[in-house]
Length: 187
Image (cartoon, rainbow, N blue to C red; front, side):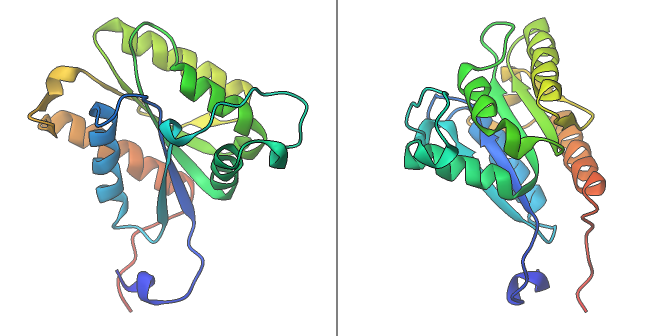
C-alpha cells in the first residue's frame, strides 16, 4: 500500500452504517467492504447513524445542527461515493438512513452509492427499490448490483456465503470503476 506512505489526498468512500443495533450483521458486511476497499488508493470512512444526535431537519444552516450531524454531513460532502448498509425489518428504508439522506442530500447529489440490504425474503428487494427511489430523488446514482443478504448467510458472527462475497466484490469494484479509482502497482 505504497500510497499510504506518500502525502497525497486520496478520494474518500463513506460507508454508512444504517443499523441502530450494536454489533449487527451490517457491521460484519461493512467490515468486509472496508477490507476489500483496502486494496484501493482511497480513504474509507464509516459514518455510523448510532453516533448521531437526533436533530430535526428544518431551515437552519447545516453548521447550526449538533456537531455529530455536521460531522456526518461533512464526511458525506468529502466523499467520492458511498456504501449504504441497512437492516430491513419491513419493506421500507431504515428511518435512520432516510433521515441522514435528507440531511445530506445536497452533499450527496451527483454521486454514486452501493446498497446493502440485510433481511429476509422479498422485503429486502422492496426496501432496496424504495432506497433507490429515495436516492434518485436526491440525485444519487445507484451502482449495480444491489446486495441483498439473508441472515442465514452468517454463522457465528461471520459472513460465510461465498456468493455474497462475490457480489460484494463486484459491487465495490463497480463503484471504484465508476469513480475512476483503479488498483495501482507500486512504483
